[in-house]
Length: 308
Ligand SMILES: [Zn+2]
Image (cartoon, rainbow, N blue to C red; front, top):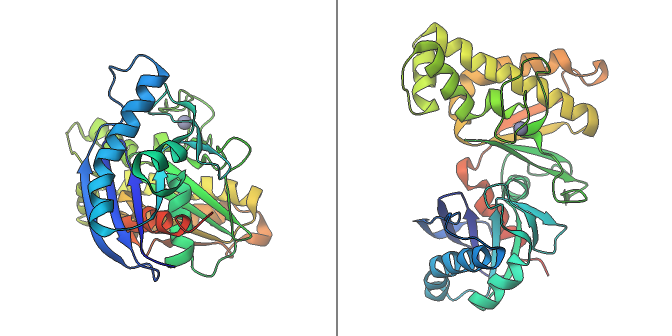
């Protein structure tokens, strides 16, 4: 094993790191980049744009550090471990796109690509709070809600790369809030950072820009901030219980911006989880805050760089 390059691709930013065989990040770079420029009118143009943006960002970093392998977490659905992107919600023109192969050609590197939330699960299992767990459900709580599942030490992505769309579990069947996916009542519309901020601003008629400020207000006893944070925790606990009914995993790890309010979020989450679990599992499911902060995805990308 040698040093590898790890990449975590977001909607408007790219994080790159050089990671050593022990999982230490020894160099890092953050860049702004827009993969979803809207001027493309065809799949071919959209593909070329994505490869151009990624190659321009990664090439100088890779050549500075003389690495030969790269792992990448990308927001989209992949066919198995092929690196073939089936689709991506933010980049609708890309369908069945050979992302890993095209990047490998453009960068002259061995490239392995995986769904971003699944990468975070892989990182959390190898280096974080999920260490030693053969089965792990990892949830990313940010502007949206993603999740990745490890079963018997194997990253499980489903038939179409769409397994564990945890954020789109339906938790409110009557007059549920509209979700970004087009359905109503998804957990993402109740417990993502975006949902918490929107709800707070609606009720308190203010314009608070981030969840961190809401948590600070909750700690100072602001009743509305406490209620909304508790509600998000309850919805999360309820939906984790539903996932556990299907999967019987006993360790769940959570990363992302909303974990900044863990002290307020966790008690209501845990209470609602235990209320909703089937009786034999009550009290046996552990929900842990990530130990990797926002590096879970990057470290997972470093792990998959060693594949193939
Ligand atoms: Zn949804």
